[in-house]
Length: 615
Image (cartoon, rainbow, N blue to C red; front, top):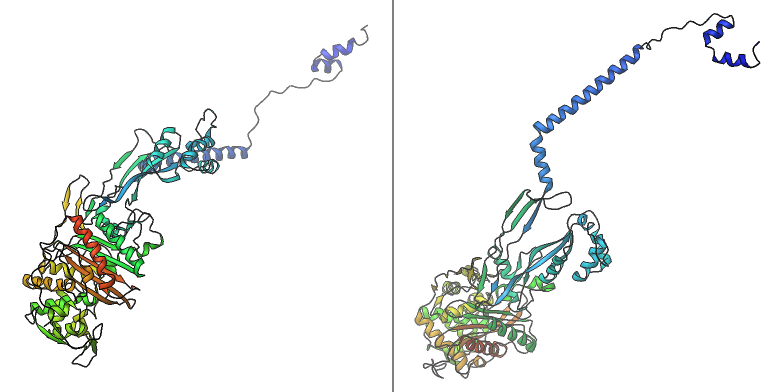
């Protein structure tokens, strides 16, 4: 008999077949294990997947073949272009110097400071200096004079090139370079500086923000002063670093040529000081002074009161062009020398020809009445006396013998109505209408310097022609050019043009001395002790404002002409007469110039017998 519970244990150890036999049941039949039968829908899905994968691989393969085999070179070129950076370099701008090489405009070395923000983060820092942008800002800010917090903000970002400062001096650049800060870049640039400030400011002009000439000679000589730009194109990595051995092609910059002027700095300074002083003394709107070589056309000074400082032109920049070439006015009595030259050259008069000069002249065509500045009775004047006393009535009385065409032709010969061709920009040709357009009064007014207009340089040029023995030369302010290699080449001078004979010019010089030397002449205040002076006063109407231009133009020494000086005072308040407000300035500036050039005094206190002014 089996103990209780033992049967249960045995039953648990029995197999299912044994258990079934013991319990009187037929055993279960064991079927063989076989693989699951594939359903037709599943087979289709597998096939579709295989096809899709094959197609995708085929597309990728085709694309790879296209990229590598067909479009590969183009893609490589584009990739290279994406890695290239081009940096420009400016050719140094040529200098402008005076006749003795004194710098008036120079280009100086400066540096732009920029940052590659991606590289700044790699800064490791140091003792008491944090890493990254904060540390770079801490070191850089004192050198640039910047706020560290603001500078730190400019150092953070993803830009590979951002300006931090422009135009810093070389000493600042050296301090920055010595720090060796990652991402901080220095680029050499040039800055235009005018060492003499306002001296010749209205002649020199200035450059604009783009480095190109914007006014004065800087503008008109731009093509030769400017250098040729250079460039370097090189390959960089993802952080903006140069790839060693990568693509690198450079085109060197070429410096511009330097201009040497005819200007004499000391004479220019004296003329500007005199112009400013006379403007203040007379309450004039402006004063312009021109100093020129009598025989060469070399311009030693062109001074405008209130000249700009090219270093900081400011609001005055728009009016920076010299009035000596841009402003026109009726020459007035200084133009009478052309009438005298025409009469002498045509054989219609001599320096001693005699004229009865009444108080007024009524034009034969009834177009008007011409008077002198002061009332007088009938005067007995020679042609020399008419010039010395600046008589309008006497000039018309003598000049009416010239045909209208002769009057026009001589004015034209002496340069009226045509630009002088000086290298300065903005020159006005003046106003000289054809004789056929002159009305009944104009044909007489031109005889004493009205009914036409000139600029100051043209007016001075007339006296330069007389001083040069009747040969007209073009005024110029550029003496020559110095190439980047140091080779100096003087400017070719055009041959002069004979306007009147040497004999006529000599007679005119003697007549013009009477304006200064004769007790009754209008230019006594232009006298210079020890030197003979030939010149003429003028009071003229300024066309654009209907104002007055008082002037004096003179030649010294009259016995051996070397210098021509013209002084033009616009709208003086103290007097309208050139003999009062312009002649003394002439004596001051001309006397200084004679000493500066080392020109000896005249041989004697009195020259050859002057033609008598009266009869």
